[in-house]
Amino acid sequence: MTRFPREALRYAAVSLVSLAIDVTMLAFLVQVLKWGNLAAAATSFLTGACVAYALSVRFVFTQHRLSNRRAEFAGFVAIGTLGLALNVGVIYLCLRFLGLQILTAKAVAAGFSFSCNFLARRQILFVPAPLPPMMP
Image 1 (cartoon, helix red, strand yellow):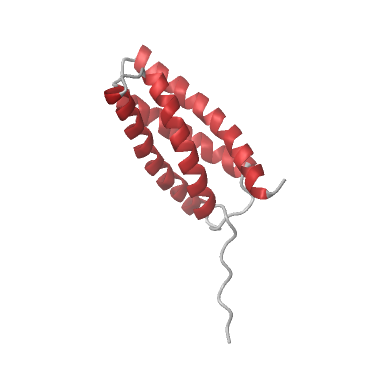
Image 2 (cartoon, rainbow, N blue to C red):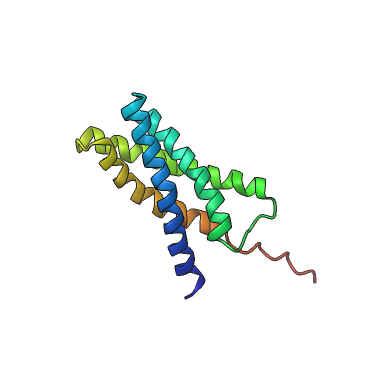
């Protein structure tokens, strides 16, 4: 199996673990602690993103564009923040215009977030570092 499908499958497994944590936290915040839907969705999404980074660098990606792991984590979170905006936006649209329940809306949003985050993270962060230019 080539690198792209292997990474995609492993990232899917990591995402499922992260999503399970995300959804469990979302349900707890909304149903038990009575948080608002969007605040709970943002909080649970960010928790899932931290889990996703830790598992991604351990089990999914073998190549790293950046040698500085703090900078890599910052990039991972930055991409995740865009994913968060997409996630919350899709949840909002599903709640407001489709009348879906919060967990159903979360499932729809998760599909969008998964695809965008995997492709962006893989293409921006987890590719070989560019070679320095050749001197003439």
